[in-house]
Amino acid sequence: QVQVVESGGGVVQPGRSLRLSCAASGFTFNSYGMHWVRQAPGKGLEWVAVIWYDGSNKYYADSVRGRFTISRDNSKNTLYLQMNSLRAEDTAVYYCAKGYCTDGMCPIHRWGQGTLVTVSS
Amino acid sequence: DIQMTQSPSSLSASVGDRVTITCRASQGITNYLAWYQQKPGKVPKLLIYAASTLQSGVPSRFSGSGSGTDFTLTISSLQPEDVATYYCQKYNSARLTFGGGTKVEIK
Image (cartoon, rainbow over all chains, first blue to last red; front, side, top):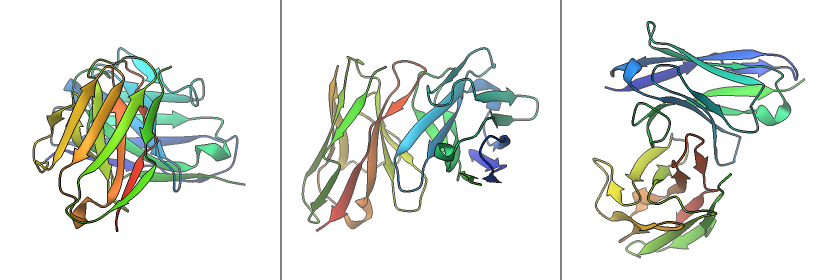
């Protein structure tokens, strides 16, 4: 069955970097757009970034543009999120999510269990 | 950027009640609207897409309607297992946006 599993979360100091990974299985990874969505403790969902099925297009939320980079390795069925210049307000559970189609303009079909990123000194 | 506004932010209803949640887009999005359910401590789950298409496996008591800027999620007969926070999301562009969420509780 469709499965996406995040890793790489943890506690990091403000201004430092962290890279999240998402291992996908159970579907043809190179045929679907992939997203990162985050949820701060006790708050709602915030979309972070999307990457097209082939990596040709990437879009970001205003809150992370210029600091975060989404990428994928279709040969490894893996999605990444490189997070630089982290701030306290980036503290959240980060979900890797499979889109319903090849690009970003479709609903999110499946969500991972999430990985917690805590930015604190 | 298009903003998505949900109302109410929370509601309490009795088992068997009809529950309606509203989502309003700041600009027209035709029918590029999805609804998600997030139960306490769980990951979100897709309920409805294209404003009114029920995702496979979702109970028929859930329904969606609307087009343009105004959308509605209806639970025809609230069940205890429906306790959750519900989010709308627009996807008419690659920059997805979620509504603020509506928390549904049992009275």
